[in-house]
Image (cartoon, rainbow over all chains, first blue to last red; front, side, top):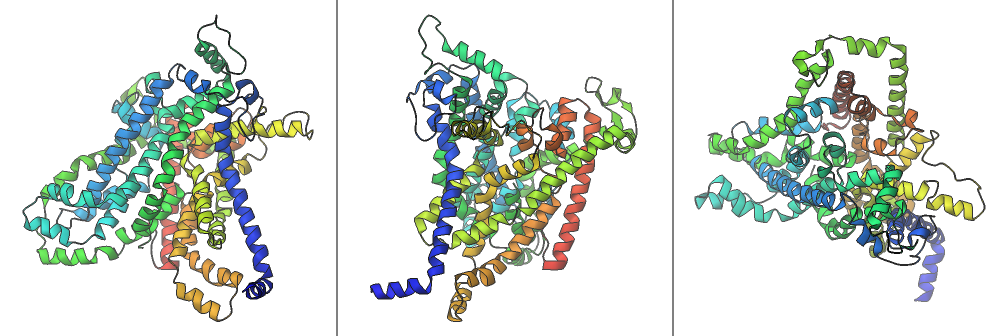
Length: 306
Length: 331
């Protein structure tokens, strides 16, 4: 047995070197991708005076969870969290339902001018009037400084509709025929027969649109000036850029001036930034591995058939 | 986004082109006798209205490019100036230099993106050679993670690692290599390269997914027969895996050519500062900066309009090329 392996090894000495280098390079890539996240986390739970100097590198120094308690006293942050969560939940639900419904309806060859309307929707992927005209239209429609600007423009997503449509086309037609024989109308067929059977593709659409909603930053930047509609991403951006106001926020959130605040736990701009970053990224880190399986499959279901 | 677009192409080619998946349904349509349902159409009308409002109706806004639009006065109160803004673009030397620089930035960053677009393919080919399933999965999971965070968070990470008090400077100072912190972020040098590097950091693992999917679809008998012929690992990689991935790569390449002028603005917006402004301003960011921040709405509309038109022309050109070369269209 061992001689056989040795023989294989001798014959493929180059293979071993290749394998080692290959694994080594991938380890390095993994480190480059994962370490920054780890760095944010250990810094958010370390002594604030140490982390401000960039001295927390491999493990937390002076572990404490005070930052998380304090940061929620920051002005605007709890509300921003609610807005971010709200747009993610409502926006995702709307996008998923619309994608499922439209994807299904566009498979209905009996629909009047189906091909035309399908193209009418799909070609919007390839052109845009541009930032300013869209901005002016949003203003005209009263969507600036309005929560619905986070939801309405996202509802119809051509890419998702294509994914769903392709998926529905791969389902057996007898499903629909059977339901038609039973006298169900098109809406009933959609909700009772198709929707429950679309889970894999809808999970894919849901994770994509949830991530897009949670991460969206540009729409707040362009359409929102009302502070009560700021999202976590926008707040984080402001925290990175406004060192002065941040120092002030740190002081304010310290609260009770009479209590002795040690340098290790009192807020610093760095500790605020790191902690808010972790709050922003944690949902993604948690949800993502659970869904990865789903969307890789979902994408293949939708895309590879071409 | 580019990968999303990429995933789309195969499907759209099918949907808008010859629609192979719809064959069965088309047959059924014939048998059904072609009685059209308006009821079904009315069901989707609300969504069509949304599409119209947010995608088609803004096109009407292009006429702002012909006015000296002042938001306070509205369109009716604003002065009609014809092609003044377009003339200004080419006649005023300062405007010309500025636009010229913006165009150079846009193209430079796009071309660096195209030049490095082979990296996800290489990543996938080499990851395919990793034979340990758990290690493969771990690599795939962890390297795709950056794709799922916002550019704001990428900037936050860049800031905490590379600012003057950040990790890298603190390590370099501690080890005595430097005495004063290096300004990684507040500098106009190498902006194009650093922006490309951040794009790669964010997109490499994700970009590889489509190639991994394509690799999974390669006919295994190709490998078997190659091995019988005595092909080694590198030979199968070079003569089978890579050629099999080429169609996918070419389509992605063509799409990135079609998107030459569309770098988006988010990445550059978060990374821009007073020091790197000259080299980081790409077209999309420039339109934002002069339009929303600078309030020259009409000028910004004119530039955005030209950009959109050129992009659509590029897309159709690329599509024609794809049709000639591959026999299938990408749009």
